[in-house]
Image (cartoon, rainbow over all chains, first blue to last red; front, top):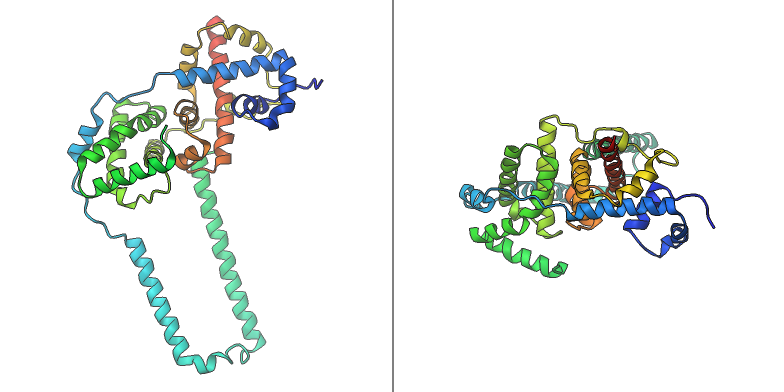
Length: 149
Length: 196
């Protein structure tokens, strides 16, 4: 028999997420009074939570909200329009470049000196790294604000 | 409970009606979802006037943004998400602490137990828990209280709760673990105080 008690997390998993993977814990739970008590306490407390009276607003919320509504104006999704416009401009710009320089494009990279190639690679990779770092920092800030831990 | 495809289909019909100017359909949406919104607002906001204002604010936002709802989740989940974040911004604006780090909110120490815990636990089984649990819930921080309510009272899945609070499922599970542990600690503390 396993004599070491289940941790608090294991007891919660056993109580609230029963499944085959918790079989080894079931053996311990069947014989350990201390863990059984802890599990029963969790179960009882959370059953009480489920039975708590549900809150209700003491106003007629629907009427109050409806009285403040203005007719919906069909809104233009400006972010999508803007993205569409930018994509269109970029495509036209790239298209014109390709059209006017197509005869020179093939030799574009072969005629570049190795120093120029390194410079281009260095600049673009630095920009990329900078963008990734700033995006990651923004993500961390958002997570920090949301999780507030 | 209605199946997800049926629910989404009903949501589509209701949203379409509202977008064509049918305010009765919006009234129906409010009536169908105000229970969930009330749970979130009551668990996060203490002031009763603020609760009423925020509830109206939530539904006005829903109405204004309804044409941007993409049916990637249930309408009620989306409305719950708006309610949660409206409350969160309200609390942040008022600089109210969301997750105070109290003793009960810390990670469990190895072999977590108090000298009298087992005795207390044994007695608690025979006591009327309802009052204790209600008081203990009041002492939890707003986010823990909301998560426990959504999971154990509203019976939402981890995924739905994750959509509402916009956190990954794993984080929701981890928060719920800590929330239950904190709730249990509050129950024991209140019980201890009462008998002491």
